[in-house]
Amino acid sequence: MTDFPLRTSRRGLLVGAAALATAPAAALASTEAEPLHAADAPIEDAARLSDRISPFGPHQAGVTTPRPANGMIASFHVLADSPADLERLFQRLTDRIVVLTKGGPVPEVDPKLPPTDSGILGPVLTPDALTVTVGLGASLFEDRPWLQPAKPRALVRMTQFRNDALIADLSHGDLVIQFCANTQDTVIHALRDIVKSIPDQLVLKWAQAGSVPVIAPPPGAPPESARNFLGFRDGSANPNSADPSLMDQVVWVGPENDESGWATGGSYMAVRIIRNNVERWDRTPLLEQERIFGRTKVTGAPLDQPHGTEAMVPDFKADPHGKITPLDSHIRMANPRTPESRANLILRRPFNYVNGVLKNGQLDQGLLFICWQADLEKGFITVQRRLDGEPLEEYVKPVGGGYFFALPGFADGQQDYLGRTLIASLSPTSQDSSQSGPSTHQVQD
Ligand code: HEM
Image (cartoon, rainbow, N blue to C red; front, side, top):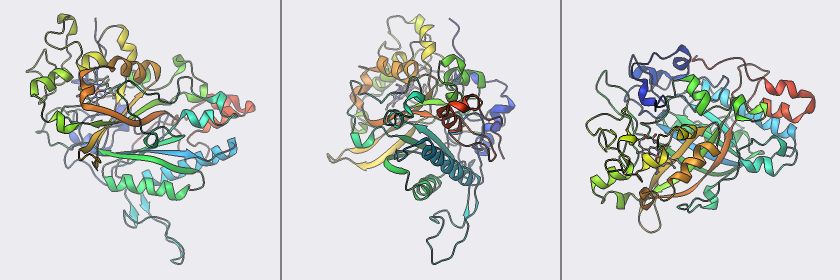
């Protein structure tokens, strides 16, 4: 079987101009030859407050763009009773996204009025590689008869898997926003801005912040996946996020996905707040930890090539009984690497989270798992079903999250806004305009 083009097979790959155009300056600064990929670790001293990621293009930013060191998922109830209300909400969101990702001086107002900005970034906003990615939950469509026909085909409310203990207050939502930026202050500032700007239409339901460790690789060394809170490299086998045609197959909704025309260029987003029992993990023997994942802890190399690198592809066919890589190891269950399992590829772009201490005295730490796919059922849901019963379950507990559909991207200019094709699809006279996406592509300012 020829293996699929993994993130790790990109070594030596010529990266197209389009991929370079979507990468923040911090990512490009990391190595001359290779841009960072979705789940690579951010590089020490490479990030700048002036890094700017354009929000414009056929797809929203924050999905295949390299992940900066900080992120947050915020889920909202939506107050919108008509297409006109929803359009207004989308236009207001678009306005704020454009302002926040561009940066610049905060407008001054009469001091007798509340300031226009929280001020936590000072009088001049810095873009700081901010991306703001908006998704819609099944409840937004299901609770509004006029919106029901437009619901993306595979969008459902997240149901409980066998190891889940979902907490209602940390789950689902009508609308979700993923904020990512170099620094945590920029993420918090953007959330505060949106909460303040749209109080009559968005009510915050839950939010979970996270981060990924910044690394300092030796000069010339290839990028590495960031480590999660179980100490393993996470993202090694991601599909190559710098390969636009692969991303068209794996991540972005296209004509072959049997969705309404308005959804073209969007993506399904699965979010899971997964608590890690780190105390128990830290007392588990190294060899057992490695067998649970199927990779070595220090380098991330597959167990059948223990002196290799995380870039190497395991050969499960040569180990049919799982003597080297256990059949129930995380990587083998998540991706058995059969011709059939190629249809279940997902792009993972998670963050680690720390929430202090649980009532029982244990550390409340874990993974803010976020993955992207063109088909939710074939992607996350199938992979999670395969993982049900894996030995890793003894150490992890999913407690929240939800499924969302990230809207297609939008073009620079007065005529376009986030969600325009959805709104146009609601009016029978505007069917044609709902089919066409924005004409510009993401470019770095
Ligand atoms: C706390 C929970 C989790 C942890 C700590 C974790 C950790 C890891 C690690 C260390 C790897 C190996 C390196 C890599 O390729 O990234 C991996 C691979 C992978 N994980 Fe997870 N993971 C978790 C949850 C999930 C979930 C919920 C899913 C999807 C349902 C998932 C899907 C995958 C996939 C598809 C791979 C790549 C397998 C391959 O192609 O070799 N993981 N994960």
